[in-house]
Length: 417
Image (cartoon, rainbow, N blue to C red; front, side, top):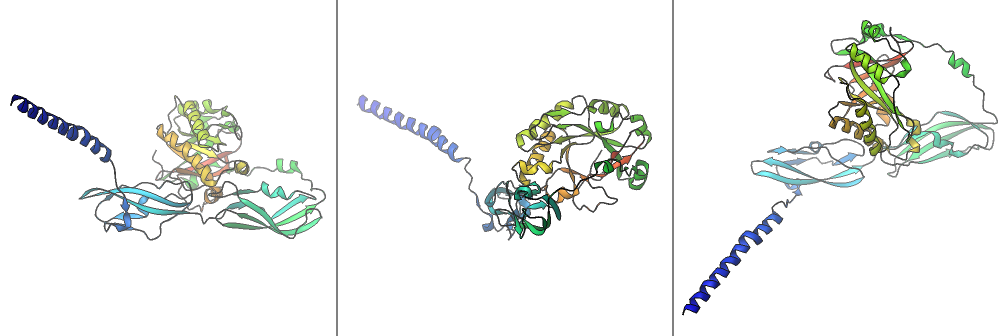
C-alpha cells in the first residue's frame, strides 16, 4: 500500500514538474518569439485612413508619408520616404488612436519622368576630321541614370569643311529625352583668339556701401565671403564699412580624388574676424563624388574648426560640373553626397548649408531639406526656391580689401543669428 501511495505522489510531482516547465519555460519561450511580431495590413482597407489616389514619387524628390496618408481619428507617425531605385516600394508605417498602436502599409511607385539635363551651345566650331565624340565634352546628367545615352543627329560631315545643322539628343533608360539644336562649323584651322584683350578688360566694380544701402532692411544683414584670393584683409576697415558678417573659406580639395588643403589665409581670417566681433561661417570647396569621401571631408572641416565658434553654417561648396561626366554618377547621387556631408556636420552640432548658382539649383541639384546659399549675380533674383543667403555679386569693392570680393545678403527670417 505504501508503495502505491509513494508511486502516486511521485507521479503527481512529475506532472507538476512538467506543468512548471511548460508554463514557465516553453510557454515563455513561445511568448518571446511572438511578442514582437507585428502584422501590417493594407492602409486602404482602414476606414480611419485616407490614402491619396496618386501614389507616385518623381525620382530625386523628397516626399513624406503625410503627403500620401492622413488619419481621421488618430496620430500618424510621419517620416520622409527613403528610396534609391525606380519601381514599386512598400512603405510600412504606424499610427495611434483610441485602440492603441496600429500598423499599416501603402505601396508607392517611384517613377522617372524627368529628361536628362544638357548644356549644349547653339554654335560649335570644330577642326576638320574631328571625332564625333566631341559631344561628350558637353555637360549632360540625369536625375537617375549614371550614364546617359547621347547622340548627334542630322546631315553633317566632319570630314568636309562647312556649316551643318544638327541635333544633340540625350536619352535615359526611362525613355525621357532632351534635344538641343546645334550648328556645327567645320573648319581647317581654328580661329585665333586675343587673350590679352580679355586680360585688360576693366572690372566693373559694385560699391559695397551702395549695395548695403540698397539691400539693408530690418530683415537683412549684408556681408562678404573671402579666401586667400583677397590677400591680407584689413578687418578694422571692414568693420568701419558696415560689413556685418563674413563667410570664410576653410579650404578645399585639389581636384577629383585630390588631397584636402586648408586655405592659406584661413587661420588669419578666422582670428581677425573673431578679434573684431564678426559673425562667421565657413565653406569647403569640394570635388567629392562618394558618400565616404563626403564624410572624410566633413571630418577634415570639423578638425580644423577646433577652437572656433560659428554663428553661420558650414557650407558644402561643390561647383565642378565640368568634371561631372567623368564621375559616372547621377544627379541623385551627387545630391546624396552633398546631404551626407551636411548631415554629418549637423550630427556634430554645427549648422549646415549648401551653395549653388540659380542654374544648377534648378536643373541639377535635387531637392534637399538643408539651407541654401544662392549665387545669382543680378539686381533682383527671380529664383523661386528657398534660400537663406544670396550671393549678389563677385565684383564688390569694399574698403579693407584690394580687388573684388563677393557680397552677400543674409535673410534673418530664414536664419536666426
